[in-house]
Amino acid sequence: MGMSCREFSEHSSAAQDHSTGLSVRLRMAWHQTLCVYCRRLARQWALIREAGQREPPAVAMPDILREKIRGKFGADN
Image 1 (cartoon, rainbow, N blue to C red):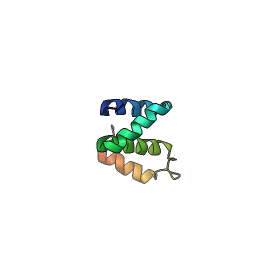
Image 2 (image 1 turned 45 degrees about the vertical axis):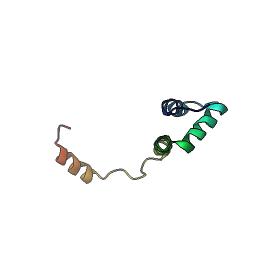
Image 3 (image 1 turned 90 degrees about the vertical axis):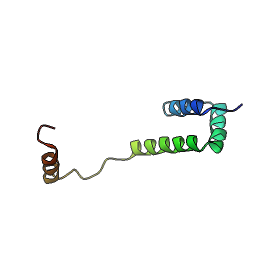
Image 4 (image 1 turned 135 degrees about the vertical axis):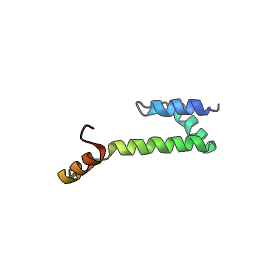
């Protein structure tokens, strides 16, 4: 049985929080082979996941740069 883009979106969003069943994963994989938009959505989820797993920069921002940025945006921000 096929899967709509709406179903794919719902399942791919839910898959970020918990594992999905084999049949759902297979249906999603098949749908991705047919639908360029859902392939793009899956790539976006992967990028978001990777960005969340990256370590923060090892070097803190220098104070002089921090002050320069504050000056550009105003002291009250």
